[in-house]
Image (cartoon, rainbow, N blue to C red; front, side, top):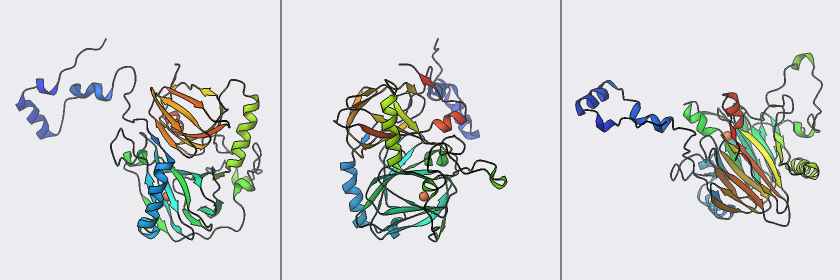
Length: 348
Ligand SMILES: [Fe+2]
């Protein structure tokens, strides 16, 4: 039973002033705001950011602001639930779209928040992470975990755009967000570990005595070509199950980053998916294909390279509407929620 709690206005003015003077406040008038009954009341509002809308603005930023004056030339996705300019797409997830023009470099830095990139458009760019040069092909997921040096370069001939996902809101909340800068790195002259040590699922380098513990971040690049092939193969045998694969650390089997999770999903032509209500918020990025997603009663029609957000415990219904399969990556915070013993699913 919900009882009606007292309000601030019911208290005498002299008592309210006295509380303000000593720096205290009564909990009961605000109790329901922070502990609503039965489930959270999300601030995040679902939104679709059409790539066709964002792309011209991002390209114009390339004309207006040289990379030297931007360091990272990014337009971020602002959650309408938090108002214009909110530097987050959901409670815990920041997403930006970054432009790098041919010949440009973005200087090396490292920071406390972790990041991952999904390449949206263009060829020829690369990211150097702790000395490993990672080529950036469309759809690739590339990690730059917190504390790892990373810089970007572009040897191609056309603009490159990628999506950055960071746990920045969490680090801002912790008052723990900061960066350190350095000159461009000199990359090792060898392919990155996804092409050498972790070429095949289920195979890892032999553990020698000097590396008995699984490495925190053994593989920074997940080539899309392999993810798509794995999803297509899984779809042949998945029956009515959702065709989904999590990006994981190939040594530990844990999530590939500490707080953010990445899940690749395939929808066969005409297929619908109705996931459970989850305690995690999410940003979906469309790699390819077309479809619609209804989130809490609002339907977004999506095209390749679009992104859309979903608040916590959202009722989500996907449908692929094109002639070819649709591929999406869901960015979420399940690893964080599991670490704090909270992750929850509810049947619909
Ligand atoms: Fe960065």
